[in-house]
Image (cartoon, rainbow, N blue to C red):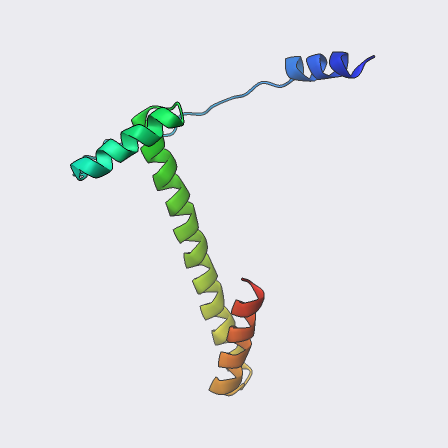
Length: 103
């Protein structure tokens, strides 16, 4: 079988299943100039304005949640290190090294 036949067979086997999530409507005030800029970007990306807004919110939310998780992990690490009688200076140094390594 050729690569083209393999690709066609694979496409026929794959099926995208979208599971709608519960949602709520939120109303927000956006400055007029910002809204106009958002509309321009949506047109440039060939997507509806509401989809662009959801994209931006989702992207920023994932970044913030990731940072929140990282902060919680560092806090937990500090508590564990403190339980083993490390000095505050040693704990601070270890946490600083972890932060530098994770950038």
